[in-house]
Image (cartoon, rainbow, N blue to C red; front, side, top):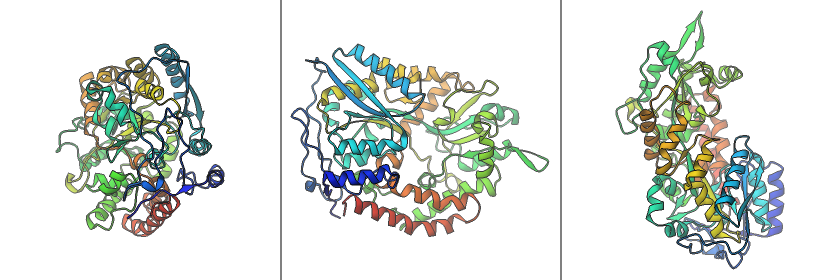
Length: 505
């Protein structure tokens, strides 16, 4: 397959962006074709021709300039710009980081525009089409980080990282460098990660006399899906024929997660390597079987095992607050956001590893993590200074401590790990410090990928199709096999449409 990026005129680009801002293409986070990169100034790298893309994988048209071994002293004041999502915790965090950055880097300042989530990508694309993109792309939008690389909107960061030397790279956990690397090209640097796992209301476990699940990610025999269901049955409390407390809620609903849990992957290694989704691997019987088996297992927690609330019941219980924190459930199988924010004093909490899925535990623990990246615009006039900001947010100890005041994401630097665990002691009060270190270090070391939303062009386009197609399964209106059979042609249609819109043939 010959993959090429077809340039789009500025007039056409702005016309498409108008449609996006009207809400017609938000799920795809992309206009109908790929814009030609605005020529970079002399300090920044110049894009190659779009038609020079190699077979299968479209190459990013820009590369980072050679980075100095040490940050150069600013010859004159430089004001960098960044776009970041609007979030009540992160707005003050970014403000504190900007102040700290200016103090540590005389002559350099950062100015941030905060944009609501659903407006982020349309605004960024409009600014890029006009040649006015911010220097740094921060957290926000529908996560098309690799799509920006395919479009040539970001600098590749290899030269900057190489110039930092071994001490820099050795301090980073591997996922920090590998999550956004495609064909050896570093499209973004991960500055923090969010652990996967099962989050426990330990008080409910203590009340039921149920042992805590394992925290050892390296133990292949520990804590299977069947073990999780067995514990959930013990923790589900019924009175008068009505469930008062549930043992479990599976916050993960995406089919990619359950296919991986059941030992296979919806996405081919070729598509992962190139960053562009061409098809699902469901033409392979073992992948199709894993998809159906994993999806059905999630539905069975509600209707067969009866240890998890139905969607309607979950919505009702959530009106009183997050179910784990109110004690309505004892376990939440989801990302680390389950223990974000204030923790209630009447309960204590713990973490456990992902259950090993599959029949009899013959699957996997998914081996993922949520990786938060920073990207540098290919239009920046100050690439070296922009790298200073990326480096600052990632490895500067004071910056990491500032970030941890507002969010409990795990830093990607080994040197900040112990301090991170110190910040979690009250949040996961039912764990010792050593237990927390075992869990969190294992979570970041076992991860070999972030979620497809972040690293695959086209996944955002099919995500809504996947989710809406499986709603009847969660409502017990269809079996997993029935829903999947009807879903797959729609998914491929969406993938093909996305490839056409992006000019990838």
